[in-house]
Length: 265
Image (cartoon, rainbow, N blue to C red):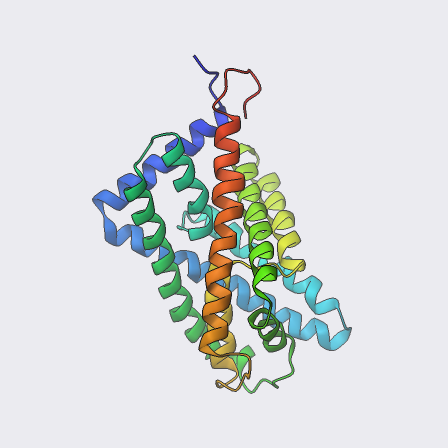
């Protein structure tokens, strides 16, 4: 008999909760996915608002402030039990590998989650664009220039950055599951997410509200904001996020813990 991993006991329990909610109350599952982008939109908005102020003080300060404030979006998602597509890439891959659910059900849950994350990102990104900090922005401000950079990255750059982004997101999720102290959990999440955010890596779900907010705040005046650029970014960010979160972290750690060795997580 293989040794029992305390971490994977928690992951299995989370998978079972997700499947149960999806099967028994689809509307509640959908709302939890929408709420993930409510919190992500608010984290993105405050990060951009503070970054724009910081960049006006000193060049480069905006990026540091943005990365620190953006991290709190994931803190809200974790503590408010919202459903985030990029963490579900790990959960669903682990679930299939460990035979907790079949591939068809895993794909339904994952893509339902991503769809309602998208709906939440579009809705709350639009609503936040109507708030005071995002009125009458110059086209050369930190937020719009940052989003334009995302939209014009080469394919391989998006793919590799997205892979590393979701390695970091799911590292934060897994470490937070092992932490017993809330203060330690919050600090861990904030500083791990700071890494991917400061490096400007690509997170497909975070890009839903970021692109929406930038589009409406600019009045649709961004040259880089074309349908082709948006689809290109989101498609390869999605693929890279799955490689990092689903295959490297999910499948990798599931395989490491399916062992007769006592060395389990």
